[in-house]
Length: 341
Ligand SMILES: O=C(O)CCC(=O)C(=O)O
Ligand SMILES: [Fe+2]
Image (cartoon, rainbow, N blue to C red; front, top):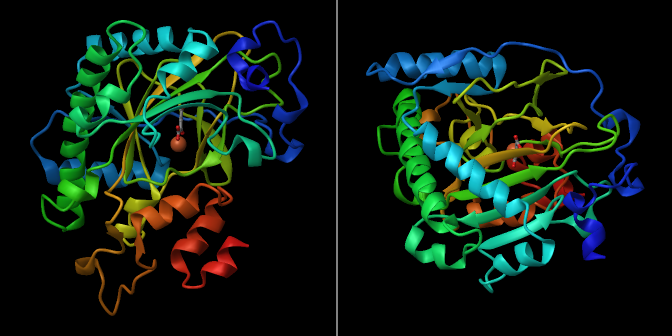
């Protein structure tokens, strides 16, 4: 059965297995092309930077950032080592990711809820906690050689960049410089998605539509496939060289009381080449209460979302339908049973 799950072993499969065929209304269709403006991060004018972030995300939902300060060589090396990881045998990958009984490092096909999915995603993923590094690195894969060295350096750079952009956002929202420091961003996760070539991309999705359940996600992709939902249409987010992509998650939407909305996105497959994305997801600590920031609330701006403990949201988000309307209703409502139906 494990072999059946592993799409990367399906190089010789000529047709898509039935459990990976999405119902017709959810299939990719024809995407719309649109150029997402580029955000140059190399500036000292933080207020202007925030204004640009607001303008771009309100219209295009994703930020495409250049001059982000993360070394191009390090990104390339990280991509290379992770491609080597994904090229290993299923047995090796599973063994390398099973060192922590608390599962801070996992390898899986489709999603972590494979057995409960109606349709599977055409992907496999490696995900692990990465802060503080010395708490988690010994649970990471040790193969291929240099995995730890390269990925540790990448996580340090990602954390630096995440702190910078969160500082711009918190200042811009009027929350002060350090609102997202410490426990608000203490639980980052690196997820590496691998999407093997698919014999019939018109029937499948690499990843179903969803918004991330975090503060922000910083991603790198070298092959097209990511799409964003905008004004009722799916738009291709084609990467430009060396840029990092940023999207907002539900936690930021709640804290900003809806000023910064979580971005609905999905991934389509292709028949020619495999695709890999590096995704650095910034989560608060488990015990943090997620709620609209008090300073953003007054009579004219009542809270749009309720207070919820981060670990409660995470436990209930993953088994929930990923439909944005369902999750928003859950976050806005006080009646849990009603939402989880
Ligand atoms: O693979 C991608 O480009 C996006 C991945 C993604 O959306 C996720 O892992 O949450
Ligand atoms: Fe995502």
